[in-house]
Image (cartoon, rainbow, N blue to C red; front, top):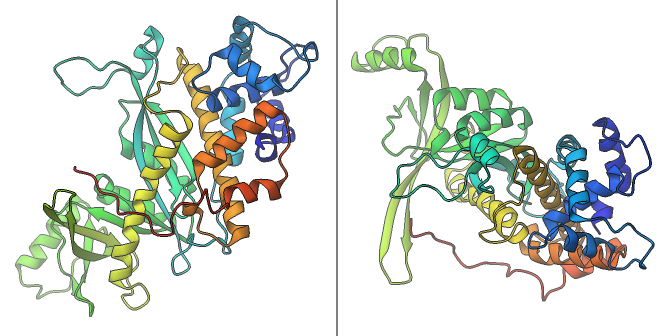
Length: 416
């Protein structure tokens, strides 16, 4: 199954493009090492020798090499980061089609971005490069961390793009790197940490539409009321904000001054959550959107749609818990090894999402109902058995009613 979604021809292509092909005959050719690094992500609880044993378990003794852990480690170092980076670059992108249920809303493809952190081994080189958590606490952080920011297709939880680096980098600069992957026809969902004017302006300039949450205390002037009880506003830079404020103070008796501004529609609504103990908590959610037509894009539907932003949190759970393993630290003790390992995990996750989406599309099911755990378990079995799985057999496993999530899953809340 792994070689169906990451075929040898693709691996050979990235190895050649990266200039990492071997110049002499080796027991561990570059293609084999790429699959070995991918297998390290599949069998995260195993050491090098056990991962190699899993890869070659179905082969007769003497037919394949039997390298030491040191030889496998040196092969990883020889391969480097670039082939895995290029492999993920070939795999990333939206995978849902018009025939996939739950991918589009009124002709737009909802996508979301957000950041997360991953722990890396506490080695001197990792500490020097990634640094420890900067927050002041009673005791220092146990592990250095890297920060990952991803752009995810909400309907399939596939990775459109991802960037990562030292934990000291904040999410907004990383999100700016993802803007190159935004396209017209996408509807970008974002949380409150991205609501600055420059970020809104630059994201809108890509041609994608926006549906972003903003701070509850942010002043959003009423420029024009709309029939559905909401209004249009202008989000401006600092200089234009002063001009707009003076114009409003003068009673709007003159023509609105020239402004560097973005016209947005404001949607506010109340959310009340009742906990298991019966206590209720209410909060106000304020959204701004570039979708200005209240008839074509009703406010009530946009308010319900915004909660699909949580799909990126579910994607991170799949990457960090289901695939990597709960509370598991990455294994590499050098920054180059960490980058190689993480690109392998991203490639594995994306290949699994491609498999799930293809199965869901063929069965006319929402991809949300198919289990990532089942997909990864099937990959691990086929790696150990060294047996190619026919696409129909894979689809049958993934869409088996015993493996499907309920059509309506229970409400998910966080005490925070």
